[in-house]
Length: 271
Image 1 (cartoon, rainbow, N blue to C red):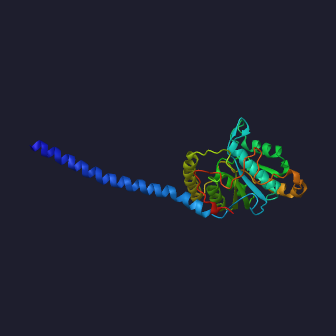
Image 2 (cartoon, rainbow, N blue to C red; image 1 turned 90 degrees about the horizontal axis):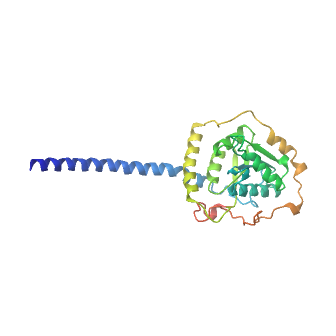
Image 3 (spheres, rainbow, N blue to C red; image 1 turned 90 degrees about the vertical axis):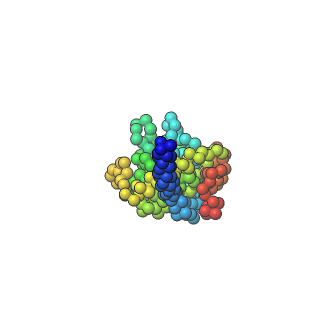
C-alpha cells in the first residue's frame, strides 16, 4: 500500500514537472516563431509600393541584377527570366547600365560571365554590362554595389519572393532602390523557396544589425561610371529590337509577381 502511494506521488510530481516545462516550451516556440516571422512581415510591408512593372518603373542609371544559379555554364531558368527582364529594362530605356552580381567562387563556376554572355547575345552592348564577381548573397551584392561600384540608387531585378529582402537590404545599406519582378519560369512553385527566404531574411537582418563586411570587398572600381559615360553612344537601339512588354524569348507572358499559388504579394502592391 505504501509502495503504491510512493509511486503515485512520484508520478504526480513528474506530471506537474512536465506540465510546467511544457508550458515554457510552448511559450518559447511561439516566441521564436514570432521572432522569425517578424522580419519577413516587415520586409513585405516596407517594400509596399516599391515594386513596378518594366513599363512603369522610374528611369534609373543602374539595374542591379541578382544571380540565381548556372548549370554547365548556362543560366538556370530562374536566372534567365531575370536576365530577360533586365534586357527589357535596358532596351526600353529604363536603365542605362546592367550591374550583374553573382558567384564566381571557383574557376569553374562563373555566374557573372554567364549572365553577361546571355544579355549580350540578346542585344545589350557589352559596354553597358558591369560584372560583380563576388555577389555571394544579397547582402554582399548590395554592400559591394555601394562601396565598390559607387551605386547610390538602382532598379533591383529579381523574383517576387526575393524582392522584399533585396529592397530591405539595399535600402538599409544606402542604395536607394525600387524593384522589378521577373516572370516565373514555370507554372509550378515550390514552398521550399518561401521557407528558405524566411530564414535568409533573418540572416540578412543579423548582417545589417552587425554591419558585417562582405566575404570579399576589394578596391573600388569605376566600371559603372565608365559604362554610364559611353551610354549615349550605345543606347540608340532600333525600335525593331525592342522586346514588347509581356513577351519573352520563350513566349511566356510577364506576370507582375512570380509566385502564383503561394503569392505573398497582393496585387495592390504593384504599380
